[in-house]
Length: 155
Image 1 (spheres, rainbow, N blue to C red):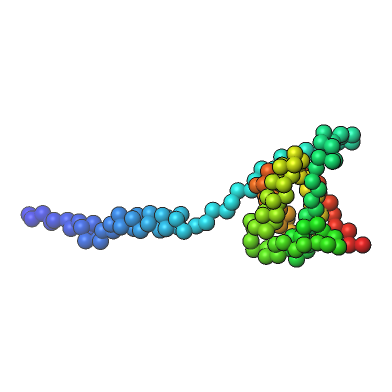
Image 2 (image 1 turned 30 degrees about the horizontal axis):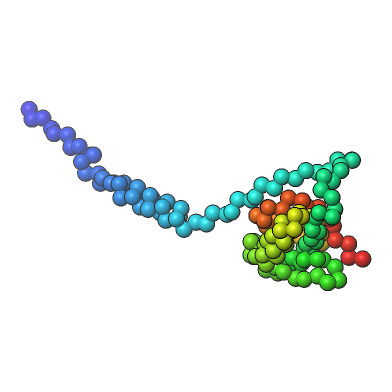
């Protein structure tokens, strides 16, 4: 009697070589890593909130007072009030270059005369949190740590 040869079905199945697919996946991964943008890390600004009776260790005469105003439309003004000067108006630019330049000039001027810069941030009600953080990052970048925060009173 003749034996029947069993036909191996697995020999007829197509073979899928995935080594090229793995190469493509790695190339895509490298492409997306290279082309992605990394958001800048927020600066760490240490704040000491005043208690009920806090004495100012620096006399007021040894401080240069600067008032920065933030409007609802995202513009940043220096010396908010009647004689305000509009500096940065584009909210898409997070580095606030004109404000940074002005603060650098004031900080250099204060250091040359042996003073410190004291900044009061005054903001309108509709200012975005991101714009506020942009101003804080600018202050930290210039080494200014004496900051007061207030609300803008339109009246």
